[in-house]
Image (tube, rainbow, N blue to C red; front, top):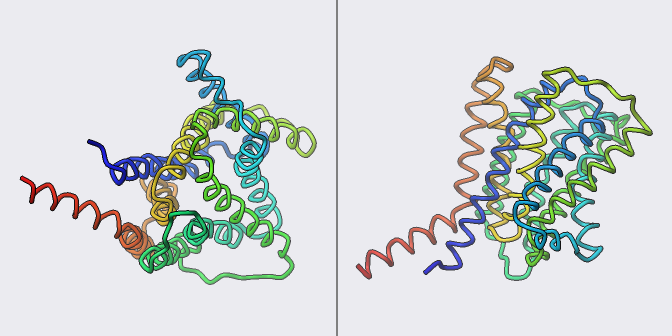
Length: 305
């Protein structure tokens, strides 16, 4: 018989797939360089929408009924998907990329803290310690060990980056409130996000015809980091261990950097090694309750045997 802890572990592992896919963002975005942000957002989310639509067709007409949800579900979900990217673009436009990215990447830490407000969730010392350790590793990845240069002239970008972190962490935690909403609805959320991206593109940008390489990157983004990733993250945040998912999220910039090193777009350094140890160690520490409960279940089976 499948136990509740096993179901939670399975959902957590499914949610972790999103983190692995987000590690591809930097590489694919590099290949798509030159495409305006909102045009890229509209195209990638449209591909995600089409992919989800095809899956719904394969499941049958009844599956489309999942798109009929209360307005609050659509507001929170579309607000999370589109709002995160909107604030991130504003942050990068008004502040240095390193500082903006670092502030925006506070969302895993905020997920861990905000999760304590959820019914039935408890925040232990190892969740906080593990997430802070992962944050330290992420800081090394983003800054490359260099000092930061905060400037009050960039306050608009800093505020937007904070809004970015609050938006994604808030969406991820509030998503737990919608456990009864099937993950298939993410198809509709992606479609709405693509539409909003197109609207902002038409009013703020000029269309750029993508090259073959850029089209490859756009399709790859739409199928993976901007497609499947949001479906599995939806499932993971609704049914998995949200504190562990928050801590594990700091693995995305590490994996992304390692991938860039592997393809020759970045160089290895001792900073990366130290960051790796911090992020992996932090993830293990934050997962202490899962590891202990798994060990306990194993011991129980052995005792019964």
